[in-house]
Image (cartoon, rainbow, N blue to C red):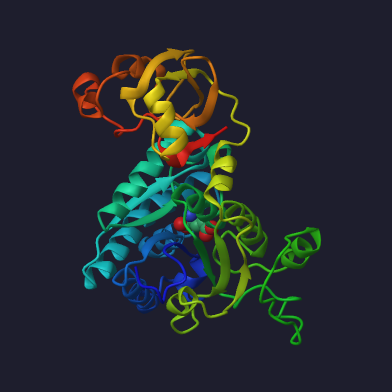
Length: 371
Ligand code: GLU
């Protein structure tokens, strides 16, 4: 890790307006330029996650800008046509710098359901561990209103939470948030730092909207609120600013910054587990209790001596010792029926017993709060 970088794991959200450079087409030179900046950081040890828009715009472009009815189905059709092309482009541009990319398409439902949250998180981590840059978009082609995030600002905030990133960089066609709409008020000033996102700020943001994409400043504020609560700094800046990504990561004050509200891991975990009524209990032996409480270990199946209640992968469970003392809460990585079959056994035996494995831990220490 390069000590000149202020951030290590970074979600970069690229809005349609940045990718098209204000035109109807995706600007290849602009995309290559953004990839060049990403590649420089990547090769210095930063972990990058790209949240890309542009599927619908590219679908339109690919079909030669047809005159289409403004129905949900045609928009989904455009996304279906555009998404594969979009991915091809990112893949080709990153390959110039010898970097592989992997696509993840998400909907709100994938992030809200605990077991698919864990699956998405595992996939994301696996990509990053293997040096592959995740390129994420909403699964627009299938997402109906109820399961949609709807805009990539909010999607990128959820990805920040999912990835436990320390920076969310929202690149757009504006240099940041202004004290008034700069198109109408030439004396409007850039707000360098925002501490509180309140109604007045939302009112200020309400007016501004950028052309082709879905989000305006309002969705950026919503996204900022989610991401900073998850422990990440959030910065809104102009995608066109020369070397914007590297300069921000190096700590230069560009755009509008929303500092993280609390970066302590404990607090993040609390937030992840917030409101989680436990779905069952896992009883652990003295060795496991000791390791959890004093060594910061994950809970392994080997230390489990009993299971109570029926739960799914991703549910919150109570972890208790053999005397019934409540030790911790955690997100369980195996459903109760499967955990029954691996309790007490060595982690190496998991895949033999179950025919699959979600990893060595029954509860990972990052998903665990000691009581
Ligand atoms: N997911 C949409 C797309 O790729 C964009 C949503 C947004 O711009 O916020 O076209």
